[in-house]
Length: 118
Length: 111
Image (cartoon, rainbow over all chains, first blue to last red; front, side, top):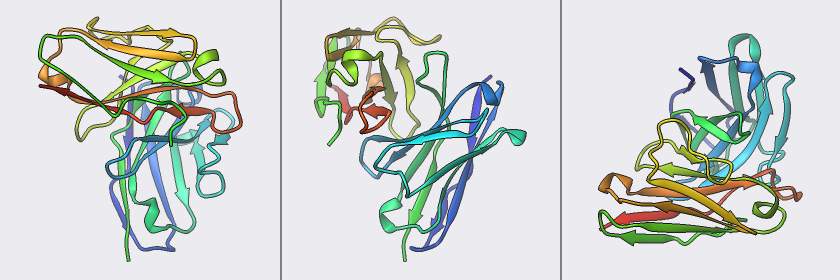
């Protein structure tokens, strides 16, 4: 069974750094891309970017380029989303999603709630 | 402002049929497959339809998808109260704006 298990909720202050994780299991981790998707409170889905875990190639939505970094450690089947300096506007639920044979986000993690507040 | 345009809300009675539209352009829907996602309250999105009209294993045939030109449509028949959710379309975009894009989402209310 394909599973994506994300790290737990985080509460941070503006300016702090953060890395959240997404661990894949039940499939070959390097065979499928992983995307990260943001959902701000009461709002819709926003695609942030994706990574190919086989070679760590990434591409980002222009809205998020330079603000976040997506990475992966294939030795532990885990993808990451990180910020070097959080802002209050980063408060949101973040989902990782594995692409399938149709090359679209087919399997989703449970989400990680990030709250940034002073 | 989302690249793909969906109606903010739709509603219908139990047992009825509803359609949700998704409008884009030649750089996204016009030249790429469309997917649909269901997000029940408080849960992660789930893939309902991919490649315009294919259903993943386990998705009932009450859900269907179609595409024509730069628009796509999700259809749901035999509405159930459990179908109350937000629905999003998604597709790749070959412009420089964003490789993958979602619609703004449609809230389905089953009256």
